[in-house]
Image 1 (cartoon, rainbow, N blue to C red):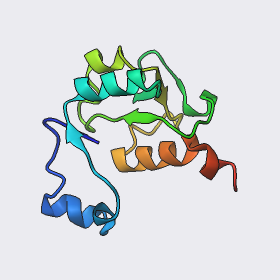
Image 2 (image 1 turned 90 degrees about the vertical axis):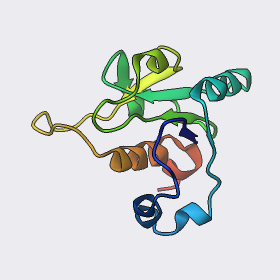
Image 3 (image 1 turned 90 degrees about the horizontal axis):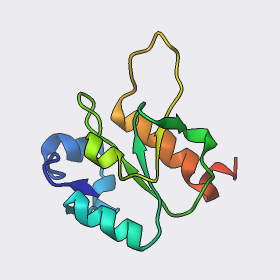
Image 4 (image 1 turned 180 degrees about the vertical axis):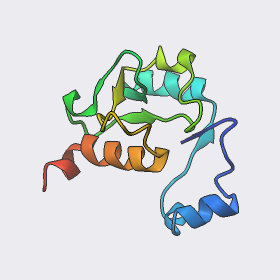
Length: 121
């Protein structure tokens, strides 16, 4: 899901960076308010990515249904959205490192939180 105001998913750079995967997975666009309401109604947890009031990602129980909320690399997720998440998560890293690229962070979290993938080693 791509929130309103995000990059155009059919931007040349976006298409190239997906290595063609964008043509094989559903991509939804819309307002975050609507998505938060839908996830809350369906009782699907929404995990935000932040260092504020967050726990390490590996402390969350694995689940087959969840939503992840990522911000851009410069500003992160807006505070108003972080307050609505089920839990905010962070990826522990070397204290000398500044931050992770959003694509790398999303790969780590998607793999680790998805119960049927992370438990099959």
